[in-house]
Length: 173
Ligand SMILES: [Fe+2]
Ligand SMILES: [Fe+2]
Image 1 (tube, rainbow, N blue to C red):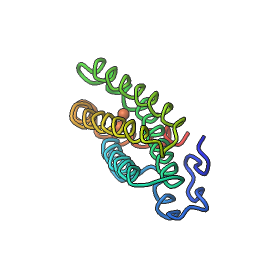
Image 2 (cartoon, rainbow, N blue to C red; image 1 turned 120 degrees about the vertical axis):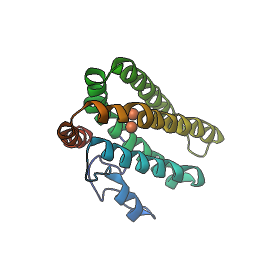
Image 3 (cartoon, helix red, strand yellow; image 1 turned 30 degrees about the vertical axis):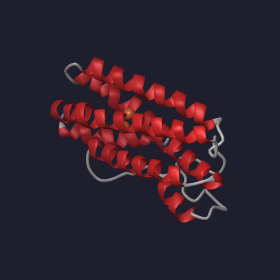
Image 4 (tube, rainbow, N blue to C red; image 1 turned 90 degrees about the vertical axis):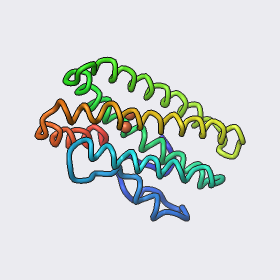
């Protein structure tokens, strides 16, 4: 686990110049609405967290990257427990869609694990991070374009609302 970051708790990052900003971001977004609304808000949050990394250096950069990792790991865990299984079971051609998304998430996991071993001030980190960020953005876009609209089309609104709670619960486990 990353120093200074504890999943699901606010205020655990200390001695950091941008403490307030980090604290606000450690908890994944929980907006009102159905599971898709929550997922979209979290995608925005993860995009903002990724956008901070390239301009930083040293400890600040390491913390910013650790935050990205934390948010992404928890978001994908929620999707893997709540969202992709619903796609697989309740959406037409959902088996293929869910399978493709799981493969992309497994690839991102491997790249994150490699990058966690790197010095963030190594020029290769930036090269790797750019590639990683582009892959995450492409993955999120495929979810938003291909997967989420079908969930809304094929799953009753009441169930989608309940899935929002299930998602957040899985993310905070
Ligand atoms: Fe995902
Ligand atoms: Fe996602």
